Image 1 (cartoon, helix red, strand yellow):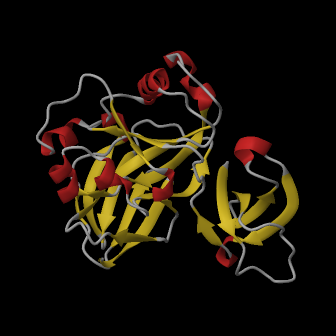
Image 2 (cartoon, helix red, strand yellow):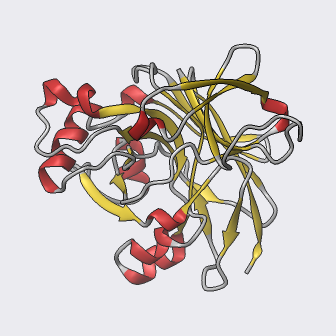
Image 3 (cartoon, one colour):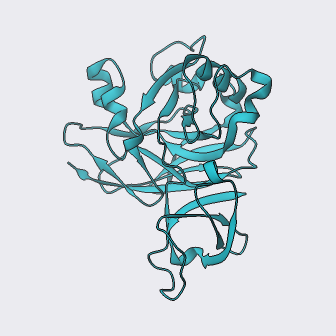
Length: 265
């Protein structure tokens, strides 16, 4: 299933869809079957109503109530381009939930930075409260997968010597366009395209630490909650996004997430 979160503002005014925003299931015919409540908490409960995808605005499919956990240097080629050794255990850091935006939203270039980079990533959406998850049970706690862009103010990352400010600005965590509950990470291609030119290209199988290892490691450090997101790292090719550029993160079989970049603040 592909679960979307959307605003029906452009839908038929005669169609009473209820609250805004809403959740729904994306059908093969590009219609959305509306479901009741947040599926992370209420399960999948179709309302019997539907709306064309073309008449709604897609939002970030999950709005984390708690945290976005990120895995740094999880591709060997990226660790090399950053001038570091391949880590011997996952490197984790946090992005605030206020950094999350959805497909089509604008990444706002902060005034205090002169370089804002793209980082294409697979994102895990956690589906239940969990702690100390054994590797063999990792799938039990995953609700689904989506795409993410770990936007980074590269100059501030270097200046600060740590990553909180550089990765924590509002709009620095695009997610979407949906949560796929059946996607299985394997050898799929992952890319970042800037203004139509491929800048990052790798395979999910190139990860140093796989999904079971990531879930096990992170959950041994902190309790994970429903709606928490884990970004799993980025392949080599990170680079700046100029003003008014368009960036697309794509993963084979999962979809594509596109955002524009604002003028330099």
